[in-house]
Image (cartoon, rainbow, N blue to C red; front, top):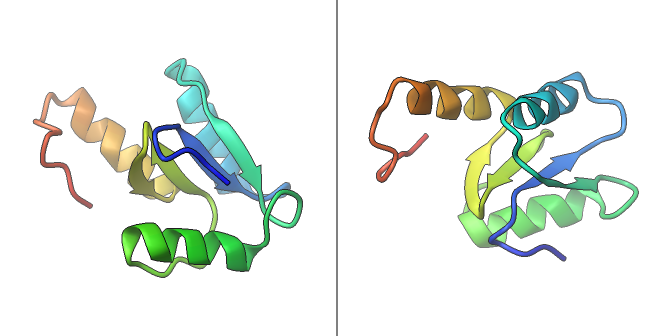
Length: 95
């Protein structure tokens, strides 16, 4: 269903935080693949995929992988880039 080395956004067609997350990636010129719930996969499929890969249960969108690394939702993406912009070592970045 998805390549774990890609940047992926699990999204919905009407989702303000999904739009904001896409805008952040667009502003940073980061290419990404969108998997839209209820079009390309069900919410249950998304939950199961992330549960299997990350060992956590999620119920909201967006859910974001950045170059294969699970980031989380919109707020997690913002926090990730804020840490990056401050020059923090991201080698051991955890949410």
